[in-house]
Image (cartoon, rainbow, N blue to C red; front, top):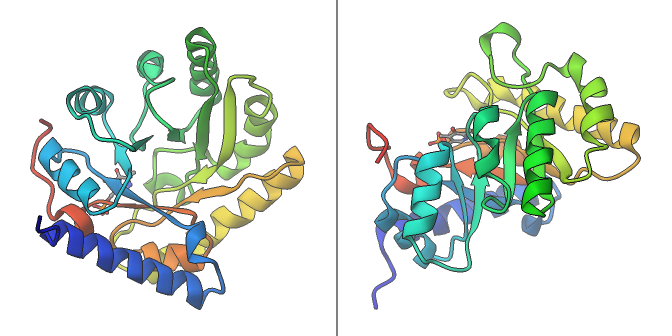
Length: 235
Ligand SMILES: *Cc1c(COP(=O)(O)O)cnc(C)c1O
């Protein structure tokens, strides 16, 4: 079978670029995981990217993600939830996603904890942090982190693994570098506060993942550079 689909070439090229960025920063390439962002992409595209050796996929919309999970029997596969999560959708998450990147309030965390308890699972999460002030609506303000950590760090059915950010500028990676750097500093402070490791930093997308890796990213979320342009509407 010919596995050299355009997807296979792109995944290979991105993984090589990621590894080079890690080595340039004196990091082990194995520390950085590629999450293929498959929102709006059909299952056939996910299957083709999976056939290229890619097992982590990120989705933004709960219903679309659950439908895709139900329709595709691809394994092994790890699903990441990377979209805005409304509290009334929290019940759909535990047990269905390996990692939720986008917990952006104490109230959402408490709801997820409750739903994870009901499902009998511990849900791995990241806190989404907003680093660009007014321009960036989604995410916790850095000033809110200390208090948030006090609460979220205690929730028994959530396992906090780190931070995520989504900067507002996409065109100039050098403009986002200070934000990536800041996220790592905030993570380091949070580790001190909690007295334990927070291993993950989810930062970097198609246009800026190399800079993100230089600044410590462990999860990069890449969509268009793998799949090409997104179809306009949800499936
Ligand atoms: C869509 C999306 C991505 C991927 O963006 P690309 O520019 O296509 O790589 C990454 N993270 C989040 C949160 C997204 O919504």
